[in-house]
Length: 113
Ligand SMILES: NC(=O)c1ccc[n+]([C@@H]2O[C@H](COP(=O)([O-])OP(=O)(O)OC[C@H]3O[C@@H](n4cnc5c(N)ncnc54)[C@H](OP(=O)(O)O)[C@@H]3O)[C@@H](O)[C@H]2O)c1
Image (tube, rainbow, N blue to C red; front, side, top):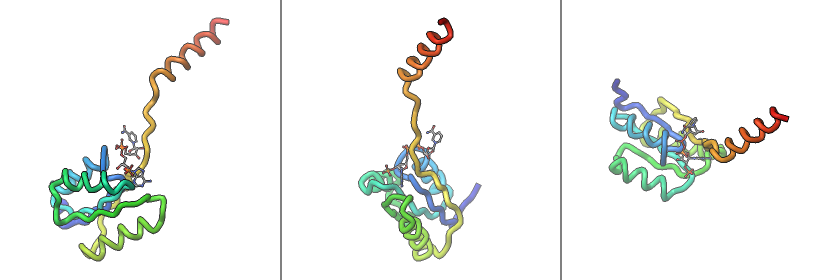
């Protein structure tokens, strides 16, 4: 699949799924607007992608409307278009195994009384 010259906005792009998606689009020739809150981690991600000329970094919290506007403005200013939004930023709460065990124990106790 070719996404050549498409401009892709990706929130939460410094790590995990967002970073993997950024690399995949970059490999297909897309222009990128990359966002996450921590500027240092965002810069490290840019470095790991090989400092591509066709990527722009916009650090900030996407719950702030102004940050979304900055991303759109950067896309239009540098690439003259917006094609795709990957609205990925967020926090994934992995289940705590000890909490699960504790819940199971409590459930068993309740059933046997
Ligand atoms: N991993 C899974 O198995 C899984 C399963 C279901 C759903 N998801 C969802 O998929 C998304 C990515 O998951 P992941 O595992 O790749 O997470 P991750 O590795 O923790 O990455 C999250 C990314 O989002 C950024 N971020 C977090 N809050 C932000 C905010 N308010 N504004 C801008 N950037 C923000 C983080 O950077 P900063 O901290 O620097 O901002 C980071 O770049 C999340 O929305 C998660 O809920 C993940």
